[in-house]
Image 1: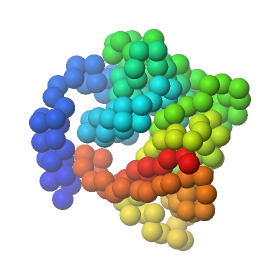
Image 2: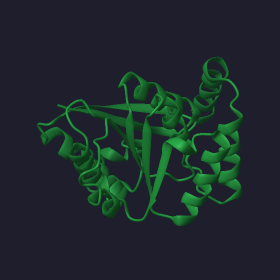
Image 3: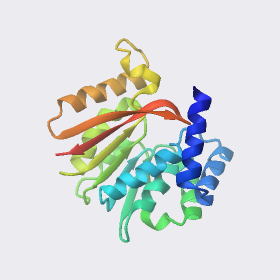
Length: 218
């Protein structure tokens, strides 16, 4: 099925996305700089772009920059005067991302903060609130990241979390994989938190079998 999933993604890309030199160059640069190939797919990037626009996002928080592929999609969704803060643990990844932002002509909208995301989030007290949050970092910390997204957002803030199905691994209650343990803890937190309306959508395609959580702060 994997080849079929890839073929459908290729069809979607050709019909609805077309060529994009800046994004293609971003992926090439990421590969040349030996970043892991774990970016969202092109169709998923466009989905994030549209969700941010539908939410009317003016201030976006991204947790997990990598080489900035999804960051570029989100920055393009911002209106004039909008801004995006993206958090990245690795200094090398942040350096590559800055190169990609410059080539895509979105650097003026983006601020990268380098270091453990938990520390960066804790230091954000007093900043303007975020109305859209995309979480795609270490899965062990997903509960913390969503709690911080609620704290740093407000009523109406949209929260998207990537990689929440993990090839069906989310069903494995006795897993010792920390990513699955963290993902299951996220679902427990979402189901118990009265401040969130949430669902999850399974996806198949170029990135295999996975999915997204979509949530909104009440």
